[in-house]
Length: 125
Image 1 (cartoon, helix red, strand yellow):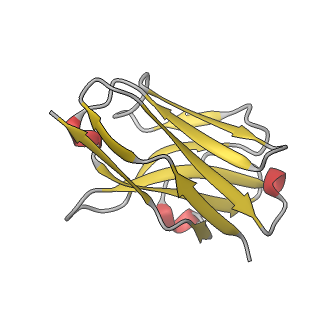
Image 2 (cartoon, rainbow, N blue to C red; image 1 turned 90 degrees about the vertical axis):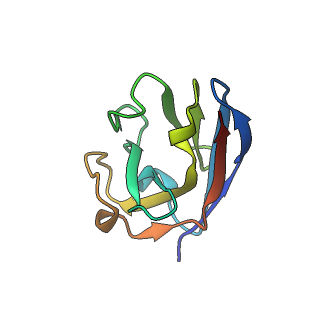
């Protein structure tokens, strides 16, 4: 059973940066597409960014395009999310997710089979 563990969340002022990491275990990392989702209190879990098996193709939600960068390291079995120019509306619990198969063009939570426990990001104004 694939296991995902997120780290790197915290409290940051608006305009600041954070880097989230997701560690993948118990599977063949390079055969999975990966993604970040987030969920704010009282809201649905929403897509943030995804990356294909090689890291050569990425997708972003419009709300984070130009501010966030997703990446992966298939040697270390990790995926990162560099978040810059953070806004209060980025405050949420951030989840990493995995789906077998290499493509990154999946933007719904139903498309992903494995999830981490989440890491909290809080952006103060």
